[in-house]
Length: 503
Ligand SMILES: [Zn+2]
Image 1 (cartoon, protein in one colour):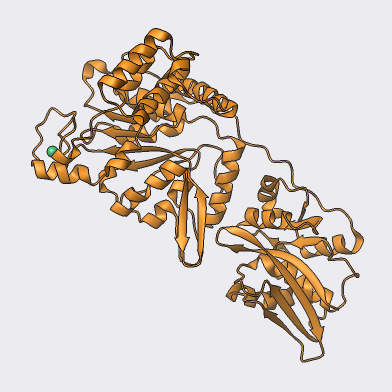
Image 2: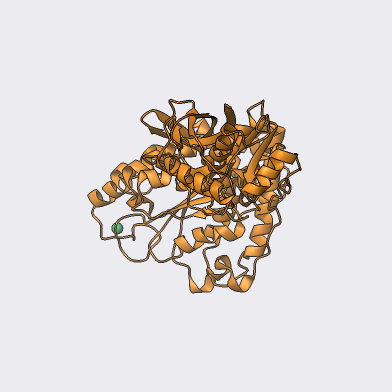
């Protein structure tokens, strides 16, 4: 009997449906797989045969040909084991007629019949969900989280081959995944162990960090070495608002595609790639299959690039795309894929090779040429992507512990401001200066923009940052003080990079 079974394989970063046909013919007993199977699948027939024999099936009694279609696309992964096993049983008339109709299968078989978890299960389930003739998709119990995240009502869970066979023979129901619970609760911060609270002084830096995280504004810290730029950036993990279900779902998918076996925590991510990292590891790439990079692993959170000027040029230039489009486009021969990459970029750099050109009491020992070459490593368009540029200086002893902003207070304000921003985004109302500002402040704003010959783009950036500052203060209207505070967080300059100094 010809048996037909549905399963799925990974193509690029998406799931692709595989239609498996199996037929038994009078020839020497063996299982023969056709349709571009990779090594794992070719080995699968041995695994499947041993497993079925363990379960008391005398198989194969004849030659069973298993064809995986579409024949032209390469198939990979052990998730086809279960489908191959059932296809063989169907071909040998060992299953009730029509038992496999309308059911899709994913699962790797252990020799004792246990169903092992399948990597990249989420896109695989999603591809099977779209097949209209399927009413049920059987998934290993170990993939319950992927099953829940997919939101598919067709998915049922099985622990082993016996459970699947009983289900097919008796139509007994298999358990469904528990509904997905998004990790939304905000966690309190213990001040004693808080990184943010351990940083002394740097009130401007702390305020800038708060604004960046509340409004998803990209932030660059500039200053001499050893003044806490990195610590400040790393403390952003404490202030980030809770992760919402949409971002969590994307992160689960991204981690699954990385194939590192890691499950994202319920917190917004903070990723800190080293400056020697390749463009592929940060932006995504790979040879055999396309893998998302650090920019995607930071989705919904923070990507921190320490020593920004030391990063490879192709990395820095490649960053412009995710910063603009909030996704990375990875191209390889014959395939390309977009990975989500909406992150807040926080970067830190020295102002010059010796580090003393800005914010230091020691003199800069670099030549003009050295400073110029150093700054030119970062292109103008990349600099333009930073909404906030803050120069940090060595904190004065007197500034220590004086009414410092605490992590708990900063986090509460960030969460509230992020809520207000999301509400505004959902309502689709565009930010317009004439609506956001009262008349006198609007005139002051326009006058300032005109006098400083600010581009419309930069003026709107200023207004957006001021909107976040107002949100942090829980103010409906943007006040002049918010505009002034927002202005203090953006180093206008950077036009004289070519001459090697910060204006
Ligand atoms: Zn210097």
